[in-house]
Image 1 (cartoon, rainbow, N blue to C red):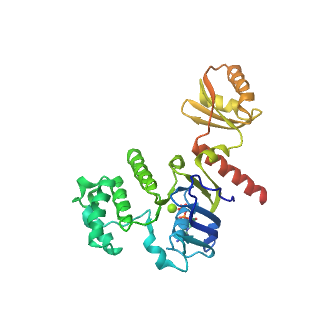
Image 2: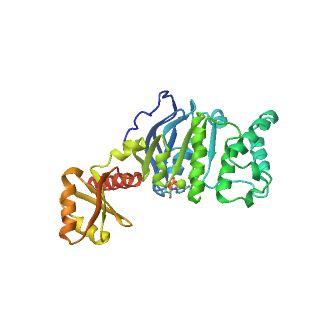
Image 3: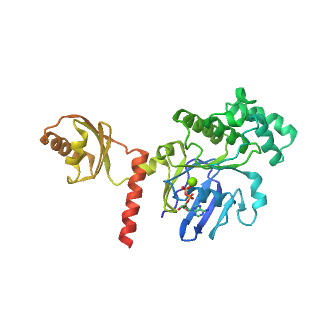
Length: 325
Ligand SMILES: Nc1ncnc2c1ncn2[C@@H]1O[C@H](COP(=O)(O)OP(=O)(O)O)[C@@H](O)[C@H]1O
Ligand SMILES: [Mg+2]
């Protein structure tokens, strides 16, 4: 478990704070010891594999679920004690959000405007703006059930924004969405971020962390790292070499177990080799490949990919947990 570092950016006003938050389901500890501060205007990514506790965390933050221990505040209010004060300030986009499939895009927006008590005058200005922003203007009379998955997510987001919340929680908004729509969705989130809204987004796609100002890595209910994407990449113990050898699978076996080599990953015809010291090992690695009778087409030092950094941190956490037993 780690303490989170101070956000980047100049105006670091906390808008979401949790202290030692905990939630269990019978024998399952879904969230434990979660202490987190999220600052105004951040686009905060909660990243982790299935079952890590991301959804539970968002539900606790949004006041939809009660914590068993610890406390949480959002937009200046205690989540547990002032749920009514907090509700108008929050938007929550559930992973299984509910749109009315028989209603059109416009009708869905009107429906959510009703729920949140948005006045007619406010609707008249907000709805055209949201349609343009979500790029749904041409589809405004289409039934929600007939939209593509990506468009449904954008409509759900537009509905979540109808009451102009200060904070929005988005639970896996890009899961199951095609890569082009995922990118477009992140562009839309960046626009909201630039408007000063605080966003907390969960994702199982570790590469999506790059879109965030800061990232919390969750694993087995705990926050095991929390920092900027760049700082998380720097948390990897060691340095990464990228090599394009002849016969990468065979070479991976040759390199594993060599002194100074910590991990070897195969990506098609490329190998990513985590070593203790890139400069010291680069020639040893090259020589080992040549000694195995294979050619090296290229080798260079690179920054580890976000996904590699996360996998590395999770493995480290697992071996630390094993040694505690
Ligand atoms: N309502 C629930 N009842 C029982 N167990 C739950 C419930 N919600 C979540 N869990 C369990 O808590 C853990 C964390 O789940 P969740 O927060 O959904 O993780 P994630 O969103 O990261 O996949 C999992 O082991 C899950 O099975
Ligand atoms: Mg989830």
